[in-house]
Amino acid sequence: MQLIRGTGGESVAHSRRSYQEIRSGVNDEKGTRTMAQVKVYGLKEYMKPKQTLLSEVIHSCIIDAFQYPVKKKFHRFFNLEREDFIYPEDRSDRYTIIEISIFEGRSVEAKKMLIKLLFERIYHEAKIDMNDLEITIFETPKHHWGIRGLPGDELQLNYNVNV
Image (cartoon, rainbow, N blue to C red; front, side, top):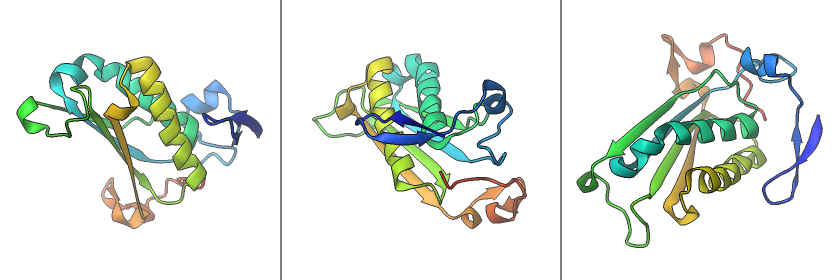
């Protein structure tokens, strides 16, 4: 483990993994894996041209905050027509909502790190103002998930969510 500086200057523990470990889907020294589903909502005219960039930025944040495997990417984009997306007057047409569903178990620090990374990187790389971005993390027990024909808590994937 090494300590790195978080977005607010705080020290955050971060394991040093090889690129090969990341590409193979290994999450940590124990060889375990994690799960996340991402939904992104925004106006079609503004989000569609940035969809690939947003996906890459969001995924990089999840990798860094949750020690998530590079190959595990589950993103869905909801490019809405103007009449289907109602938002407050103090938001611009670039208003974007990100919802992330995860197994419960990650630390408060890891979830806060994810939120900070998303705000910073999306602002700097996708040019979406922080006032135009809202993020919600939905954390549910594994038994609330159905994956590959089984409840999530019955899967033998050895998922590690305790980061």
